[in-house]
Length: 429
Length: 130
Image (tube, rainbow over the protein chains, first blue to last red):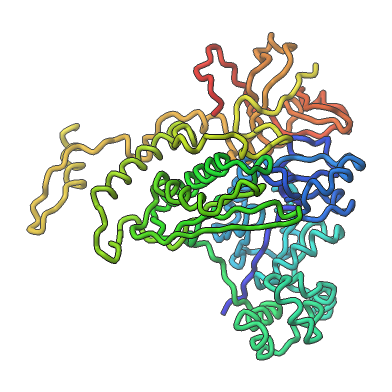
């Protein structure tokens, strides 16, 4: 077996960095990015982290801190982040085609075949190239396994002295152990909050303790995954690049209402809109759903939090927006209560079958004429929406109310996705 | 000459039936040949798509040089700025991006990218945003 070399390229505070690309005045200033509904903090600059704003924090709880410390807030501009992410991937793909896009801001590269002698110097070079060409900072972790590469990128991010790239390759064993010993076990990729208490009960507090665990014991505690983790921490790789896109197993679309509401028509409009979005995604995958449902909740941060959900098993699988809306709106009347203040609603679809393999229901009475009509209708709807932009054509029920529409107060201009909102630059003689 | 090409192409694209008789399927569309690509403004104006961004030019000081307020600047971050290049730059305490020749950029300011072209629309063809 030839030795593997993996690198994880991880964007630092990615959403914040994307906003700063067009707002260099915010460099070194505290910045947070909020979820699409301005509900929660989804990204923080280092300065905001130092002010004690936790990840995922409900924004309303920290408004005072935002004001007191002049923290700049942005509503997430996910089109921008997606665009910058694609640019980074395109640049990394010029290094090697062996790339796994792990998330919007993390990619693994298999660089085993590249003739590199000094990995950290190489990593700093890649970091400089991404900074210069794309304009966002990244950290690189280089190691013989993906688990160690992930850890190395964290180390590179936390310790400025490495210049943004840390490598486990060629590190002497004593130094390696010292580094692993600084890493709390819950920070190990794949341990997290669920497994951490289990291993801590065994006296395993750091990544080094875990690396030294007997593989059999790790397997008893955490299954085969535990044994693999121990191997990976010792530089024996168990996880390879997974570039194959796996088909979706379920699709969910949910939104928080602009304001909590008790009005039935607002809920119906939300069901219709979420159903339309979920069904659109399903049709793009050329799938049909056998089970569909929705949930709605009151505000989790207010007393008397409640959640309702309904799920329907369909006799004939579907991806027809109209049918899904009709069924779920019927179900809604079942749970709706005008005394409740609803906060959030989501539509989910699962148990998929391919579009071209329609199974008949128990009685064998699939109405193929109806099925074909629905399919033709959906094709027409999608071709209009694909051609003229999303949601040009929609079911009347989708738009009964605007109240459920997310608030997006403080988003940045659409710098890279709208000709009318390009960044401006002034001629200086 | 044309006949030859026609014949050769027909043989290549003709579907063969099991008994080996070639079926004539017509002259292939030359436009599907990758070597005969149509002129593409993206290829002319953008060398590095990953590092190219667009800006809106503000100011009318350069009208004599053919750069107008409202023009679109194509900006490539991957290029080394030569001293006669026109660049987008940012000054630490500043409020907005600036445009000037590289050698006019004040000391301490950061060059954001090199302007490779500006686009001036004499007659707007589209009102929408994409």
